[in-house]
Each structure stands twice: as C-alpha cells, then as structure tokens.
Image (cartoon, rainbow over all chains, first blue to last red; front, side, top):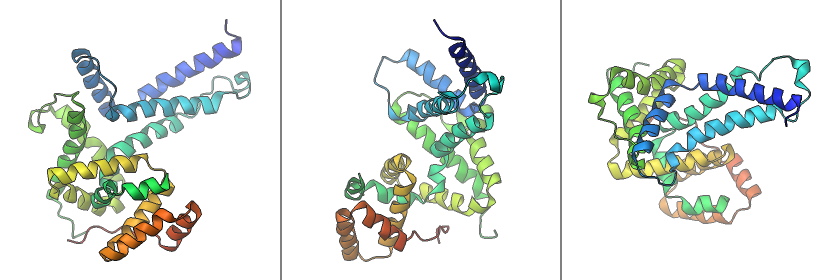
Length: 125
Length: 148
C-alpha cells in the first residue's frame, strides 16, 4: 500500500511522462511506429543497437525525474510544480541531436580514422 | 559565405538525411521503407526537418555541415561503413575521450607515417595523467571546412 507521498510521486511521474511524450519529435514517433509494426510482423530476435537511443531517451527522462524528485523534500510545499519541461525537452533533444547530427558535426574522416584505432582506444579503457 | 554552392545544399543534405538513418534501419533488418522517391511528402519532411532547423539555427556551422555531407557522398560503400563504425565509437565516448581523439587525429594527420607509429606506441604506454597533459599540450586544431 502506497503512502500519500508515494501516490503523489507516482502522479507527478505520470504527468511528467505524459508531458515528455508530448515532446517526442514526429520523426521519432514515426520510427517507433515503423519499428513496432515490423516487430509485430517479424519473428522474435534480440534487440539491436539502433534502438539504443530511444531507450536512452526514456532512461534520460526517467533519470532526470528521479534526480529531481527523489528523495527530495515533501512535494506538498511545491504544489503541483513539475520539473521544468524545458529540461526534459533538452534531454530528449540532446539525444536526438547526438543520433542525428553527429554525421555532419564532425569530419567523416575522423570517424574513418577512429574505426581503425583499436589499440589507441583500448589503451584508454 | 560566397564559397558555398547553394544549389547543391538540398541534394546533399537530403542524401545524407536519407543515407544515414535508412542505412541504420536496413542494417537492422527491421524496416522495409521504400526509396526516397516513394516516400510521402510528410515522411520526407520528417526526415529533412531536423537538418533544416540545424542549418537555419547555426549559420556558423553551415560550411562544416556542407563540407562533411559532401565528404560522406564521396565515400564508397566500404568507406562509409567504416566511417559509420567510427561514428558509433564516437557516440559512446565521453567528452574527454572525444577531445583526446580529436587531438590525436589532428596531430597524426600532420606527422609522417613513422612518427605516427611512434606517437601511437607512446600513447599506449601513457598513464591517464600523461595523456591529459599531452592533449593539453597538443590541442586539436580549430575546425575548418575541408579545403577542396
């Protein structure tokens, strides 16, 4: 049985989630739709890398919510105030930026070079 | 920016917008999306809109974006695949590693092959503190559009 504090936390997180979903770009929603449709058609298989950023976006929103709300003070004092939507939006947009624009942001020859640098990268692990 | 060939921008950006995400989807085997010509206007808009916004929001980055897009176009399929793997690595790096890789890349481009190998060997033996000091002493050169 939840305490009033837990119920309030749950309500706030649901509201935050709903607001965050509203901020997901149309492109991401379209990709989700396509992937969901294909997943229903295709036989089950392990998750692949290209879905990582959607999971990362959800994780970032959730982590942000947790970081902002728990184990913080009793929210009663803060009324219905939610974490700033701009912060949530920024987290989502940052991930979208990383996924979508890295190709144009850096010199492709840097990426080409990076692919061959196993030893350099391993040395930094 | 008189040096930018404006008429080629839509073609170049569309090609990149199409090639990268579509290739990722195809490699997953999860999508059976058609070629660009068969996409709806809304689908094309969804793909292009982020790049257009990026282009309009950051005039200072336009030369780089165009230059990089053209370089992607120049690459053959095998080179693109390797560059995509490199981009995947880049995505997984934290800012400090990215800075180090930029610095190393910049330095190695300026060195003859023998010295590159020497730097590579030295790098592999450095402690993290020594690497940080090396990066500080050998910062990545400022970004400049490819000179072609």
